[in-house]
Image (cartoon, rainbow, N blue to C red; front, side, top):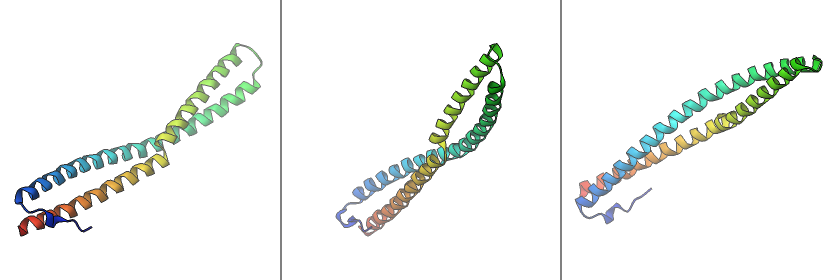
Length: 136
């Protein structure tokens, strides 16, 4: 992009703009590091949650088989309670996977790419201001 740097006529104006750009770049760099950390956590959580879901599904299938075979009584009631707890845990993990799964990971990657482009544009803008400053 062509910036209208010719409108800057004093070195102090250039210095002010350069200081603002540098502050923005620091903020963007911090945002990028934060997003990268979140991306890493999402990737780890996705794998962990998927494994836990597989284990819970297997355990729930076993409990379902036991409940179906048991006659009415305390043992069956205990296994039904266990079944409900497993179903609830599975529900929570499924929701967690939705919040930290592949889609959320892609969103973080997209956010990082946008921040990288903003940093690149800030460098371009800074170079244009520095060139203007040198010509004053």
